[in-house]
Amino acid sequence: MNESLAIHGGKPIRQKSFPKERKVGEDELAELREVIGSAWLFRFGGKKVEAFERAFAEKHGVRFGIACTSGTAAIHLAIGALQLNPGDEVITAPITDIGSVTPILKEGGIPLFADVDPETGNMDPENTERLISGRTKAILVVHLAGNPCDMDAFVDLAKRYGLILIEDCAQAHQAEYKGKLVGTIGDIGCFSLQQSKHITTGDGGICITDNEELATKMALFMDKGWERGAMTPHRRYLMLGLNYRMNEITGAVALAQMKRLDWVTSERHRKGTMLNELISECKYVKPQKVLQGCKAVYWHYELLIQRNAPFTADEFARALSAEGIPCWAHYIGKPIFLCHEAIQRQKVFGDSRFPFDHASREVKYDETTCPNAQDYLNRLIVLPLHEFLSDDDISDMAKAIIKVERGLSH
Ligand SMILES: Cc1ncc(COP(=O)(O)O)c(C=O)c1O
Image (cartoon, rainbow, N blue to C red; front, side, top):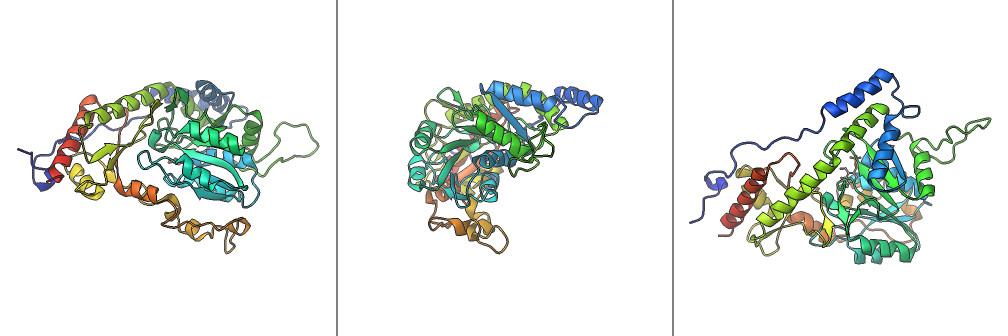
């Protein structure tokens, strides 16, 4: 006898609310007290931002960390360091935040979107290779929801075509690909410290690299391009940078957050893996696939409705919510270029067509550009998953998923 679904008047699996995330506390206060006590809030001349940069770089086993004001700023530092010519191309992911895309356009580059693997939602290397041209300067991979991309294939592409490989790790702190931390496999790793991320300063970001030339350029771009400290008769600006400097208050919180990083990411990995196992009997709903040898860190939990399922993602999400499990369907809804009208129309600088008037070929952003990405989003359900959930909470999530699949399959 099947239990009646809550959406049909049955008893919900979960009747109490889930624990909330609480991401800051005494460690952050202690670091902040020191900064306020010093009365010095500016990163140059202060200690906290530099200490955070060092700690973050060391944690990743690389030489350079450049802190900044957001994940979008981190991507902008990386793209700024490329010193693109107008119309140069950067290949990136269709399922991402707009912060992966805007910096490419702001630097006069043209974003091209590689379609995704149908089971991981991550950029597909073969699709990426098909987009490479003489104008391609970089590949910007995005580790979606904390799930590493197929990095061997992307490293191979970058080497064969002489491209810079940038990793957008905004959602993927401490995720691993074959034993290597994401962000250290390509030339540059970019991280966000926005409120929802594994560690947070409310807003913030950081880039890491082992490449001294790129590190120097990113540090300049972060600080208006100013050759700070040079004893020249007049100020010299070496590139057209912006002010993306992290301040000491943010740096203090970031430094304290480093203490939480291992716990947060290992708990998310453990809980995500546990949920995968608990729902392995499901036929019509499957977790986002994690490639062999990878450690995913579950920024959120992605569940995919299989194509032969007798229900839609919207129907499943409604029924699962009624069981007391927070979730929503479709994440960003459409590939990112279809979420932004000006980008889709290729009118991003006033009435001009810049940088598309410098393109070496026709660029199209429409429904046919990334069909797999649209199909993935159509079938996607997102569940919040975080370090404060107990094993019993995860078990309730699994029970509800199994119950809803059964209940909707008749
Ligand atoms: C994949 C990805 N890239 C970039 C960003 C931009 O980060 P921020 O919001 O810190 O600017 C985000 C933020 O959600 C993201 O998820």
